[in-house]
Length: 417
Ligand code: C6P
Image (cartoon, rainbow, N blue to C red; front, top):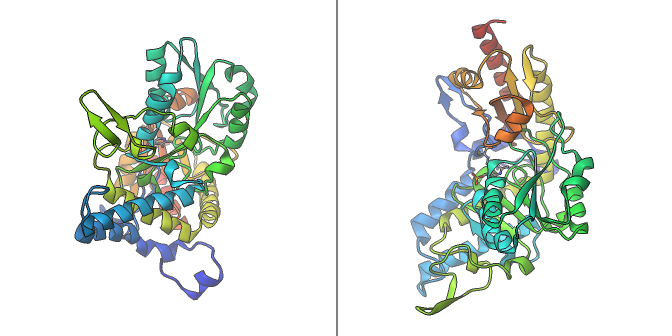
């Protein structure tokens, strides 16, 4: 970040100062300045992350936990130091609770296979919410099917808010896990996860929270949330692709069988059987994504330096501006109007297929995502096959919202009233 006296005195967030940190933002698309509004799919990377990756590959490239030589010691130190950064970032009490995985998807699958699967019996239930990403539905369905258990769903209303009054009906004595999204990728709803956790805990039901869309936008403290597992993906939090985090309470991780077998997760191996290391090593079979973990550490440090409260406040203001500008355009229907939202504005343009909207916007340099956003049940709830989704990060500006608005006006002109 470019530090000026102003940023040091008043720590509010100024995207004008931050944008030079993100080289990819500075380019033209079809002759227009790039307006990158697809941050929920993946975020752009600051030079701090690019430098960390470059340094690892240029200077320290070596495998971890295996070598006595200097390069291996350096890369091991950087990899384990990244684990410590994640621990601090999430407010976890031990770095042994931090498992590096490929992303949120793998984190959820790991918990489904190694924690829930062995505990499920016929007739048991897993509770999810109506606004889950497929990654927080399908892994549970797979283990439920194998065990003869079933998935139950906490419904939502037409604003895209969970119907908490229904919780008593779907959280039952057969519930073995509650899996809920912290912030919805398709709607932007910030769920009252504290209330969900409290209700589940009262019944002794463990909770997994999918933080893929929360971590880039707000401070997360797993101890304060009181959940049992928390997952997120590095690439949505300004880090590299192919790296993510599963945070799990130590008492759970210690009871869990390995998810995959291979090098680095064993203590002894013989043809008659093998023994396994303590968590987190037990869940990190094979050569890990070393550069990814180091890059993720750099990304989280960058976020800490900006300040998550500052990010949250700035983005709330930007989202409210966008909601007002885009929501007041004729023929636009907003999908997801919850009272607490973060980062996402989903909508449909009357009479125009979302893919056409996305293509026309791209011609004007505006990058949005169109489709079902891997949340088909959400689309079904709102009776649409797809939406246009603008998703924001702290480096986005009001000018970019204006560019989106202008692009949508042109879409309406092309397709007529
Ligand atoms: N959502 C989106 O454009 P992975 O693919 O493992 O990094 O993240 C999966 C995932 C899980 N939960 C939520 C809430 C998510 O938003 C995502 C990824 C992207 O919305 C790609 S579909």
